[in-house]
Image (cartoon, rainbow, N blue to C red):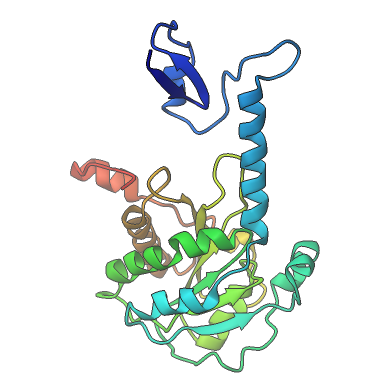
Length: 265
């Protein structure tokens, strides 16, 4: 008799279909977990513990900055500069978010005066940056390089989003794009986010930024689609003169009006 693995539970082909089976195909959320007496089935408990361990590991796994720099340099945007925050260790970074927003030293960041600058930050999931950072940067460069000048990218460790504002001032760029590891969850531990700030400077708040999140193909948003959204935001920010709450993402409505098929890549 054949066995089929469905959502972590072995079932035979003679078992009646589970009410939740079809819904599980549409979400990574834990739904219809079932019961074993007063508790969850053993398989579900083990799944939860494995997901929790993966999330913890994603936070604490150190960034391989040398390998990331090698991958980034292959795109021809220049040798990436490395910057670290004032958090002296991963433990201090997690305890002191304020230190993650301040640079330790920006002396090595060249002033380019380019239209766009890229900062690749480890954030709360260095694993996400290692898995998706280079691929996403490549898609962004392909989408934007024919319209804007691009500064050499910067790799930032023990980084929070606001660290990018200080880096952008040193770079002299007009618009900053931060690629950073998002807080891991029990469904996804390697999700990357993009934060866009027009006319960046120290003291900007989250209300001054636009975010494109949940980038982790194949389950999440794909690189090419994320790059298209960012391109629309860059264009809108330059027309509006600012980013943040007043700037809206119109890429989906524009695509629908033109008959373009939207996919997650």
